Amino acid sequence: MSTRKMKQKALAGANADVAKELERKKSHSSSDESTKEVLKYEDESTKVAHNAFDKADTKAPAPSVSASRNVEENITSVPKSVEVIAPPVEKEEMNRSAVAKISTILKSYVSDVDISNEYGDSFVESGSKTDDESSAANSYNSKKLAKAPQQLASLLDAAKVRGAQGVNACGAIKVLTDKQASVVSLAHTYGVVSTLIEVISQESETQDTVVEFDDGDGQELEGEMEMEITVRLYGEASERAMLGLRNLANHEENLGLICHSRGVLSCLVFVIENDRSKLRMLACEIMSRLASSKENGDMVKKDGVLNLVSDTIASDEEYTVKEKRHQFIESQRFLTEFLLHLAKNPTSSVYLANSDRLMTTLIHLAKLSKSPQRATSFLSIVAHLSRLKENSIALLEVHNLIVSLTKFVRSNDINCKTHSVHCLLNISSELACREPLARSSDLLLTLCLCCSNLNEETRIRLAAMQTLKNLSMEPSNLVHFADGGNCIQTITLVANSGATGNKDKDMIQYIACDILANLSQWTRLLSIIGSKHAERCNETRASIDEIFSSETRHPTHRVRGYERWGAEAS
Image 1 (cartoon, rainbow, N blue to C red):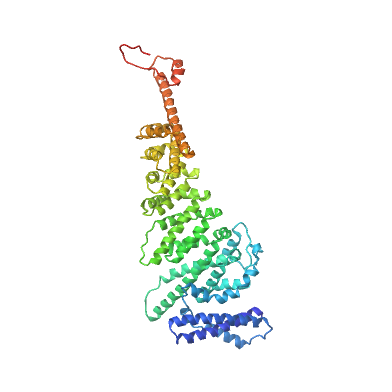
Image 2 (cartoon, rainbow, N blue to C red):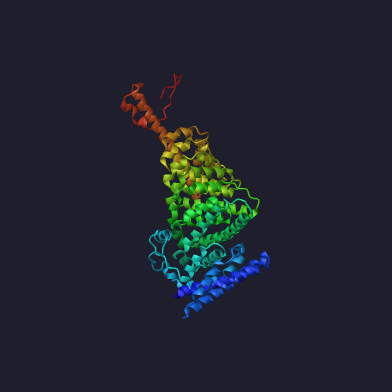
């Protein structure tokens, strides 16, 4: 018999002995005491198993056929109550206690992996890869994944097992990901990311199965209770797996690999959509971390991502438990950061600006937010989207966007004013947007009042004046400036203000003079066009040369009168 089979049978015998001892302890201890005993005997089983490994390495005689049968019978005779009484391990202290021995055994892993060569040697073994793992290994820029050491590979296999074994294995992986020295090597090790995703995904399927159970007779009710306990344990495994994935995503070098691994985004989206526990908050945090990398801008292309984010940040779930309410608010905050990261990325910015559902949600939430900080976060996303030239027309077409930005310019919060006026400035830079902007209700008057307010911050006054300058460069906006209340009068007052010696304030005065020059230019152009029209209609006997003489092209100071007495017409 090979050494490997001898190791497996020795481990199976050790586990069978521990299972019998657990059954004996169950009848003599309370629920709290049984939890401590399970943790104790799990540690003892680890010692026994690895002592068996050491003995199996020597040339021990092969076990007899009867002994092998006894081991198999012991394995099959393990009572189901072992999994039922397994500890829920809901506290972090119990988590670390349960995996302390496993972490100690795996301490050699850090030294085994060459961190300087983080991608390691290519692992190509015929028939050893699944389709998901092959895609995860080859999808991200053809980077090579390091082969997992034997101990780590065994731990990854144990993490996929339901029950206490899977919970503790996921806890051990989480402890390993807490070490900053090995977090990069772990992420670039074959099977680590895919195993964590598989654990989380299987938990989602298990929850769907539990919902279908109905109350029945005693036997069915007992099966239902056992299933619920198993799901609770496996939920802990799912949470630990998500924590491990979060730890891997906290390192910048891992973001590209994790995001482009097959099944990661689908798993995170499913958790955010269907889960209402701490798992959703962790999934939102991972999404935010992945979006912070410029190379992950294409993650927004996945179907349903933007709609899901819009619905989540716009929902108002009611919780009586303060802890769950905190988790829900944190989930919304992480998704807002997710959108902000994508808005700063030109690759994904286009998709956000063209999502009517998302843009409408952002503006609606900004108007309804009672907290100025929350409204500022939404307006900041819109302001960053306006930085890309291709987004100007899309933003202009968003329902009530310009009207809402105009109201925020008049708000009392300095940050809301800043983001709003900068967004209007960027949109007005696009030629096709200038005339629709000037038609917007109260926009010109609001900008003029902002410029003339000496108590306003200089950067806001400057941005408002620059917006007016862009709008004045459109000839058709001359009518809107003239019909905009006191727009021209206000601009004239700013242009006539004395020099202050401050660079920005003097620039505001200069731009005001430039606006008046633009408006006067369009007025002169209209006068020439009117002269051409008069000649075509034969409303004057003057020749073309007289119409386009130097006197017509430039303003004159000739006084006009009607049958005046005592004065000559000049």
